[in-house]
Length: 547
Image (cartoon, rainbow, N blue to C red; front, side):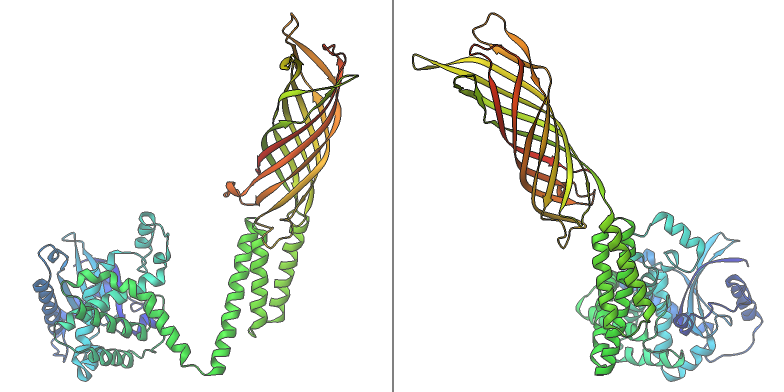
């Protein structure tokens, strides 16, 4: 008979201490073949033999059939028990093998006859619990799921179910499988009318016979103390909830983290004062190195502010602890200084498109009088360019844009206001601004902040094709020319700044701007002679910063 072993899950000491699954000289299938040969050749009568184990497994499977609904009975497998000599220092092992001749999967429970004989003498419930536990692995199909120390199975699973949560942690998954199998064992033994205190005795025998530490854990198995607590809670759960045990499968997962928290809390409460201090120092050391690793990751993605905060927290934790060498402190300080120095020198190139709309406050005169104007308005759009250092409150900013202004002159005739002329002015503007912002050097300056911004500077204005229209002239519109001029620009507003591109709504500026310029006409002859124009504009401007 030829078999290919697919997956193995065991109950016993070896997993807890990371010993080999099987004898190093035998592969799983060879172990299976050898066991069948030994059974056929053996004439020795044992105190606990294969027939006894198979009888107990069949009894449990019958209990399942009696208690499960018709739709649930399909999960009840056919399980063959097999005493083997090659599982070394463990009680039992759930196994799935493929029968190459029949092309079917067969489910087995290997058990260690010598260990079963010892436990049967001290407490007959122990072997029942162990076999019920292995049945649980088969019932919940653990042998076809993830992280089973089988590279082929792991690769197939990773392709189908990529890790996206804490539930993909291999150790957590393995521990949950063992606790779920214990959950099934508790349910099956509860059908045999055991008491809650029996569970304590069962795990005590398993601990002694398996030479297990109560608090020792491994990649594959949780500690005895965790399993005892899980068994107790499962027992109470069955007492409160009637019906199929399958309904409460999620109970184990839900209780797992609570059990760990409660046990850890109880363990700390029982420590002496000195032990608590030592444990706290160790916690500080662990925290400091986690924070340092976090700082390294943040630095790589440009989150320098958070990296510095993390590094400072790590250094503070390290100082509270005694579990470090001087070189650790020096390395951390050197890294902190390096990041801070880099940030103090680094400048980020920014582009900020803007739009604005406002009113004109014109002073329009000729040689003898001030000419009143109406319908004064202005619109602008452009781009701000700057190099920003996030540790500085001030920087230089260049703005280039297009501005369109419109106004009309009026005259009064017989107490009636009459439109006389209309001006449409088009300009290219270039500002060189000195900016001051309150977000510089704030606690979150390296990442994002909100505050007041003020900027001021000269403004170069170059006129394009501007139009003049005289309502009393036979000609409609004519082009007018201005001399380029230099004015001034002032801006005050509210700014939110962020270094994270994923936060577009954290990068904006809303401001009130004031522009002042004196316009000099090249050639124009209005109804009132050669005018002069002192133009002021007040506008609301909105800009968005892009890195």
